[in-house]
Image (cartoon, rainbow, N blue to C red; front, side, top):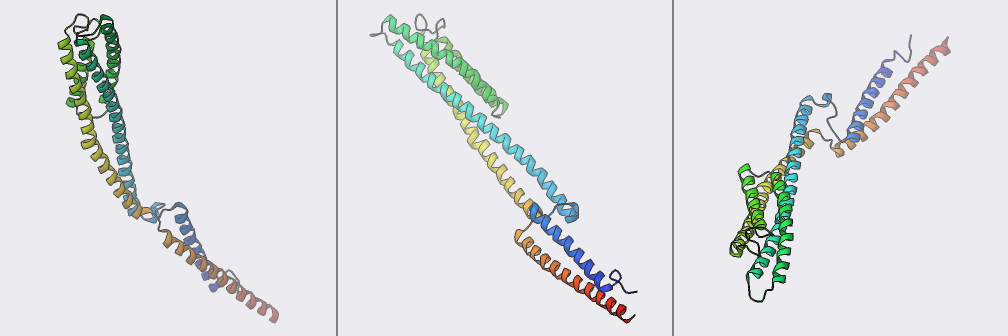
Length: 268
């Protein structure tokens, strides 16, 4: 018996149409996701390579964020130490003015002492913040400890010229106080320079290196797993043409079968 189901031409046309529609579905999936590798069957070896690269990229991204945080912390510490530098310079000017006995009244000296006390209080507070910030920059432990000690020593010098200190304006050793503040100005500038040098010579190159590695790994992963839109668009057009042709072929095969059956029935 002749039928549509067992007609060889029709079956071949149906099988070819099914294969072409499956290929078209895969093309559409690649175009919609932008990836050539969407599952293991698309390329087992390529999938393994892409996953390994993705893990390395995530690790480098985390490393890059860590360096950026350290850069931000270094900027905070630099700003705090920079504020301290200005305060110590102001202190130095006040103590120099107070050490000049000529033409300076007791009231003026007392006013200078009040300013020194206020500035010293600010220095103690900002020094505590700067010491904490330096801890987060990522300097070697010995360097961190050295810089923190310099700031602490400078803050102690500021305390010595405050009211009640050994070098206060009323009855203290002004020469020793002036020498201590001048040394504090130098030490604070040195701390700021050390932080800046670490940013320029360590953090910045490390960040650039990490970013170059990231760029290269991402490019490599893209070549492995990303779809080529030009090629896939061409593939889509080809499958659409094949689908149209396949459908037409199937219709012709089915019509031929029906024509034969109609002729057979007419002879009965």
